[in-house]
Image 1 (cartoon, helix red, strand yellow):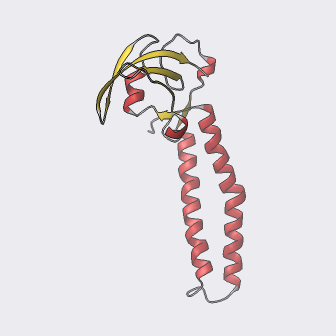
Image 2 (tube, rainbow, N blue to C red):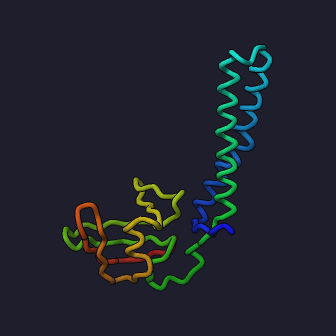
Image 3 (tube, rainbow, N blue to C red):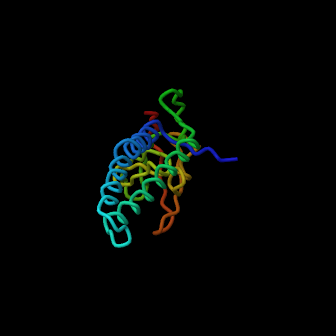
Amino acid sequence: MSTKVPMTPSGAKSLEAELHDLKFTTRPKIIQAISEARAHGDLKENAEYHAAKEQQSFVEGRIKELEIKLSNAQIIDVTTLENTGKVIFGATVMLLNLEDDQKVSYHIVGDDEADFKVNKISYNTPMARAVIGKHEGDAIDVKTPNGIVEYEIISVVYQ
């Protein structure tokens, strides 16, 4: 039995787009490259053939991986839920660092969607685990490499 993995609708769309591109653009190009390389004769010393076969193996593996991820995905669309001020998967949370008064915002997403450069953090990160289940106005302690940092949850947005 496989475990369902939470994913936002945009995360699922991104994986579906990659899967579609691999199946209907990349795979046919590789098949064509293999066919052309075979036409050149001796396959033992044919670098183009071996490179195309290696790329085909990688692409087929990625297709299978994406299909499994999508089949195990539990799509959670927070925009359909009533915002109670509680931090849940898919929410965007604004935090105030109580030590230096800096504000930071994080969108809590699935592992495959996480991108720290755009403040999307996995629900498995220490920060996300510290805030999930808490409410606006709550103070939380987050264990960081530099020690414990105290934050206050300023706002929770379901978008």
